[in-house]
Structure formats: structure tokens, C-alpha cells
Image (cartoon, rainbow, N blue to C red; front, side):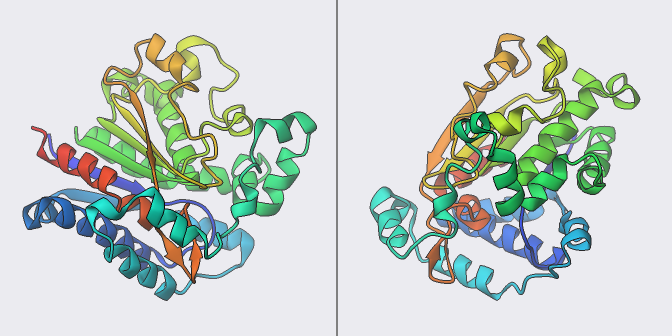
Length: 307
């Protein structure tokens, strides 16, 4: 059984696949080398990896084109200037003073807005790709999920020891895929509980939001049929002022999974300060700031060392 890391990106406009994949790998590599030395970076380089990319499906709908990657690389270089102990509240406050990208949208997905009946129109305005993901009249959700389905199926069939690292909308795509492998008739008999993700990592995730939870696959079901049955351990990272993961604690939202014995190695919430600075604005939702963070580097290093 070989180790494999599967990465899946988040929402909004993206560079082309090769460039985004390089950025993610570079962020992880730097964090490992910074905190655990070149041997850790070499272990990451040598492990099997797949990068699941679905932005091209959203580009077909939005016609926004592909983002030039220079500002992302500049943001990563700024992140590399921080040492392990620098990812703290004081440094975050200094960056946040420069202003935040979409900081005012912290409550966009809140339960309160849902009660008022305005959450979904706001989601449609500020995160139209998320709204399209749930829209049954759009193929976007199905097409985006299938990009991960193909990769997960290969990994399950090969008996790989999988670490699934997901960001933002990618966490929703991952959750729905894992539910699908657990309960859809074409998958559950072969996979179901027989094939499990060793480590499910979510970053900047909206999975704790009430308006999102009620639209996930299985949301209307009860007991075991409500949840994926194929996750051994779940670690959720959220950052100060990350408006997408404003409900930062996943543990209480999915306690039913623990009570049913569906998470044998538990679920853990990890709070961080994301020092990502992009275009001279704080971007606490940015994936590079999560991937390079010392707490993520520690998790990755521990997983790479596990027998």
C-alpha cells in the first residue's frame, strides 16, 4: 500500500492547472523544509501526489478566463519570509491593517442571514460558483465532483493510503464525493467502509455553515446515511477573518459522525493566523497561507513519517 496525497483547490478564478499545482507544492515544500529540514521536503517530493483541478468547468460558465499567477507567486515569496514562530496574532494584525480582501463578507453564509431568507441571494452575488455548485440546472457541480471521483476511485482501487487535502469549495466537493462512495449503489458495495481516507484535511471550509450543511449530499437523511462512512481522521484548519470558514469549528457540526463510530481516529479543529498578503491586501482565505503554516507542516510531516 503506497502513500498518496490528493490536493483539490478552492473557489474563484484560478491560474491554469500546472501553475496552480506548482504553487501548492512549493508552499508545502517550503513549510516542511523550514520546520523539519531538507529530509522532510525530500519525503514530500518523493511521495505520490495528484492535483485535482476543476476551475476550467467554472470558466466555461463564467467566461472569466485564467488568472495570471504572478501575484500568487509574490504572495508566496512574502510568506517565505516568515519563520516558524512568526505565524502569530501580532504579525497577522500588522498585515490585516493593510485591509482585507472581502473582509466585510464574514457573515455572508451565516445562519442569521439564512433565517432572514437572504443568504442564498448573497451567496449568488459574492460566490456564484458556490451557488452554481448546488444548482440542479447546472452541470457545474457534477462536472467538478467527477474530477475528484476519477482520482479517488483510482486510489481506492490501488489500495493507496490517502491524505486528501482540500480548500474552500474543494472541501464541499470532497465531502460530497466521500458521501457518494459511501452510499451510491454503484460504489457502496465495493467501497463503502471497505475503502477509507486515512486523513481528510479541510482548509478555509464552509462545511460548518448552516446554509451549506443543509445542501450537502445526505443532508436530509438520518443516522449513518447522513454522512460519509470512509474517513478515518478529519483535521479542519480555519483562519482568523477567513470569511468562508467563519464557522470555524467542525467538530460540533459533525459530532453525529463520532457518535456513530464513523471517525475512528477522530476530528480536530485547528485555528491559525493566515499571513497571506496579496496585492497589498490581507487574504486570510488564501490557500498558500494555509499550506505553508507550521501547523499544517507538522501534520504533513507526521503523516509522511507514519508507517
